[in-house]
Length: 397
Image 1 (cartoon, rainbow, N blue to C red):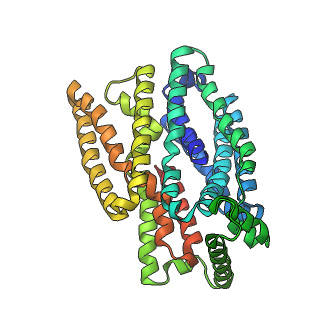
Image 2: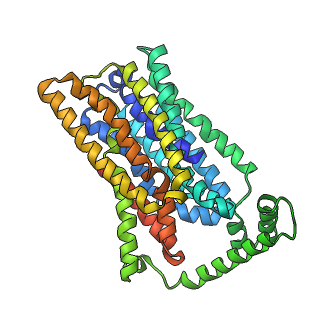
Image 3: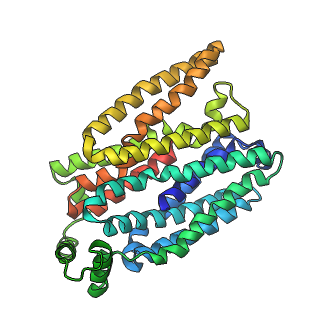
C-alpha cells in the first residue's frame, strides 16, 4: 500500500496540472513555479532522509509506517485546502516528509516478514505496485474532469481522496506483525519466534525453518554490532569492488529519474500539448490507459526477474529506452516544425513502447537489485545513498 500511495502522489499532481480549473485558481503559474511545485515533495524527503532510518530502527517498522501515513494525511488535506501557491508548496513539502518516513519503513517490513523463497519477487513487486496508485490517481482525475467542469473541486477531490489509503494504512498496519528482526534487536526474542512460527511455519512450534531463520537473524545482528563501529560512508568507496558496486547503485538511482520518464510522470499536459493534444478529458483518458499498461508491465517483469536475470533486463531496458526516446524526440520535432499529424500519432504509439522498456527493469529492480549487490556491512548506507541519488535526480529534473 505504501508504494501505491507513493504512486498516487506521484501522479496526482500530473493529473491536476492538466485542468484549467487548477491553472486558473493558481493564476496560471509559470514554468519555473510549476517546477518548484513538483519538486517541493522531494525537498520534504531531503529533510527527513537522515532521520527516517533512525525512526525505523528506534520506533519499529509498524509505528514508523503509521507515523509516516499520518503525516501524509495531514499534507494532502492541506494540499486539498490550498489557498495559494505558497500554501500548496508547503503542503507538498509535508507530503514529502511523510512519504520519506513511510517508504523507509515499508520495504524493510516487507523484506523482513517475507517467506525466504518469496522474498525476491515480493520485494520486486513492492516497487512495481507504484502503478496501482498511479492508476487510481489517473482515473480519479479523469472522472472529476468530466463531472466537475469549472469547479475547484475538480482538483481538490483527487487530493482529498489521497488521504483515504494513508488513513487506512495508519490503522490497518497494526494488524500486520512487527518485523522479527527488529524484535530480536530489541531483546524481544519470544515475540520474534512467535511471528516466525505463525507466518513461516503454519503454527508448528518446532519447525526447523523457524529456528534456522531465528539463528540467522541473531547472527546477522551480531555481525552488524561488530562492524557498526568500523564502517562509515567512506567504506562504500574504499575498495575497487565497493567502488564498482556504488557506481552501479548511484547510476541506476539517477537513471531511474533521468531516463525520460519524468516528462510523462510530471508534465504530461505539456508533452501532449507539444503534439497538439490540449483537451483535458482526452489527456486524462490517455494518462489513465497508460498507467494500466505500466502496471501490467511492471508486475509481469517482477515475476520474471529470477527467470530472465537482472543483467539481461537492464541491458534490454536501456537499449529500448534509447531507441524509443530517439523516435519520440524526432516525431515531436516533425510535428513542431511541419505540423505533421502522422508524427503526432507516432508519439502516442511510442510513449507506451518507451514505458515498456523502462518498466521491465527500473520498476521491479531499482530496490531489489541495489539490496542484492551490496554486501551486508555496507547495505544500509549504500541504500541510503541510492535514495539520495533519486532525490537529486527528481529535483534537478
